[in-house]
Image 1: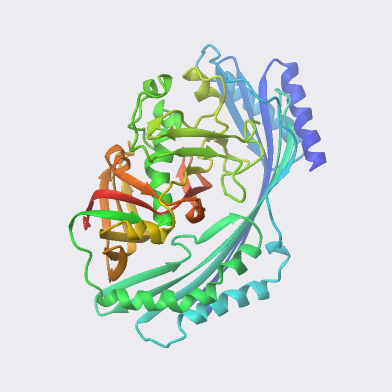
Image 2: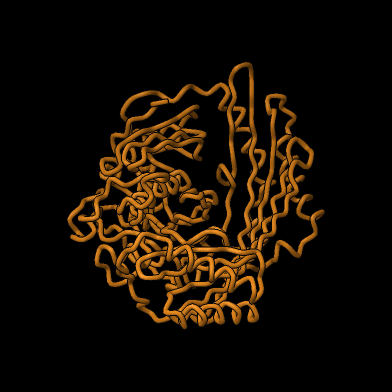
Length: 488
C-alpha cells in the first residue's frame, strides 16, 4: 500500500498549495458470500471494488469526488472536481473543525485474523456449510421445510492522507457464519437461528471464528426448537418482567441508544433520511443534565474493542480510535461525533466516528462499538434465580422504531417462561414495546463480565446516498421491570 499512500500524499500536497483542506482515501474491498439451502449451494458471490475518494473544504464549502482510476492523473482529476464542487456551494464562512487531539494519523493498523478465509478453498468452505446444513435435517422431521447455512468474509484495505499530515494504512478482515431452520405445519411457520439471526455472528477475525461456532453441533437443537415452536402457546399479552438475551439487547442498544446519540442526527443533519433524535443538543452542551435510564445503565463508545466490527486504528478523518463514556449511571455524558459536528457544539475533540462505506462515499457520523457495560448481577443463572416470574426473550426476529428513536417495538424468535427463578415452557411469537427513557429506566440488573460479549450487525443503513456499515455492541443479559409484552 506504500505506492498508493505516496499518491494520496502527493494529491494532498497539491491541495495544500492552493490553500485547500483535503482528505484523500484509497479503499480496496473484497467480499465473499457463500450459502447452502436445502442441500444445494444457493449463493457463491464475490465482489471486488477499488478506488479513490477525495473530500475538500474551500472556505465554508465542502466538495467530494471519487474515481476508480487509481493513478496520478485520476487522483488529480478527482481533486479538481472536488474543489469545483466545493466552490459551487453557497458562500459561507468556514465553520469550526475540531482539532486532532492526538496528532495526525501515521503508521499501519490491522485487525486480528488467524486463518485467512480467502486462502481456503471454495470446496472446503462449502463442505463446512453442507455439514452444518445437513445437521439441521438430521432427524428427518418433515415439518422442517427450509434449512440454510451461510458464511461471509470481507477484507478492506485502506490508505488515508490529509493536509493535516495524516499518512496511514489499515487492513480489516471480517468473517462470520450462521444457520437457520424454518418449520411449518398448516398455516403456522416458525424460525430458529444460531448463533444469531440476520447475518449470523461476524467479527474482525478469520475462519477460526467459523470453526469455533460449531454450527453442526448446534444445528439439531436449532431444528428441534423450530419444530417445538409450532405447537407452543402464543406469548401472553400484558405487563411482565423481562430478561433479554445478549443478542436482542445488542439490537436494543443499537436502535434506541446508538442511533439516538449520533450527533449529526441530533443537529438535524440526517433528518431527511435517517431521522433525528429525541435527545437535544442542549443536553450535550450541559452534559449530565439528561437522565437516559436507570443507575444500572453504563454505555461506552469504544473503537479499540478487540475483534469488534466498529474497531479501527483511525477513523476516515484521521482521528485516532478511542474509548469514552456515553452514559454513566443512567446520565447522558456525550454523543457520537465527527470533527465538524463535535466543533458545532463546542467539544474540544471529535468522537472519532467519521466512517465511509467504500471509496465513493463521504465519511459521516457512524457508530463505533456502542456497548452496555457489564453489571453486578452475576451469571445468567444468578439473574434467573433472582427473578420470581417473567419472560426470557431470545434472538431478534423483527423491529420497528420511530425516526426520533423514542417509541419502539421488537419481536424475537422465542420466549421462555421464568417461574420461581428457573426457565419453563416455550412461547411463540413474542414481542415487546416501550419508550426509550422509560424502558432503560426500568432496567434493574445486568449480568457480570463473565456473560458479556460483543454481538455484530453488518447492515446498519444511514446517509443519502445510502451507506451500509458494520458495528458490534457488547452486552450481557439484563432484566427490565414492567415491560409491555405481546404487542404484535
